[in-house]
Amino acid sequence: MLGRFVERADKTSRILDVKYFLLLPSAYDVGTPIDFISWSALLKSASGYEMYRKKFRRITPTNVAKFLILDPEFPRSILYCVNVALESIKSITGTSYTSYSNESEMFLGRLSSELNYANIEEIIEEGLHEYLDNFQMNLNKIGDTIYKSYFTVQPITEINITRGE
Image 1 (cartoon, helix red, strand yellow):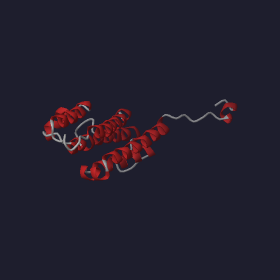
Image 2 (cartoon, one colour; image 1 turned 120 degrees about the vertical axis):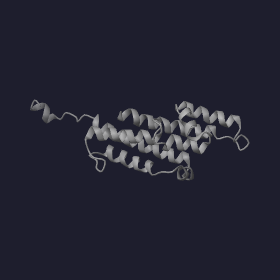
Image 3 (cartoon, helix red, strand yellow; image 1 turned 60 degrees about the vertical axis):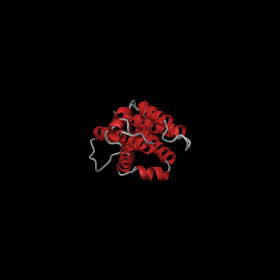
Image 4 (cartoon, helix red, strand yellow; image 1 turned 135 degrees about the vertical axis):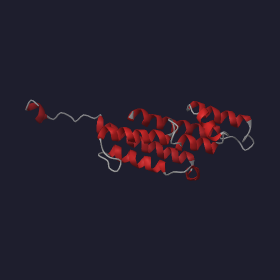
């Protein structure tokens, strides 16, 4: 679960980041059927079209970004994925939500808190690309610390070999 949701958060952020620039229409195209179809396709690529339409009805770039980044109920939103990843690592380590036992937990906890208290207006003001780029760098750091904490093997030293350990 931990790996699945870290990867899912990464993929959602990348889809939104790449598509955001490709889908930004010229001022002439805003609100046209082409604009609607482009943003609808983005939602469909994240399997979120129906859920989005139930929540927002009208498709707008800001609401699509809000939905894909900050929706606490949509299973492919960045917030949802990071929160499930945090729950998963807490389940692995057995630590409480107010503490951490390794860097992975600390970084995931910090990222979860930032997302839980973020709002789309601040994200857009910062710049959506810049925000998503920073998020992806943080997620890469989390991936590295997960690898170091759970998958790296300590090298066998000469002392262990000569003593038969």
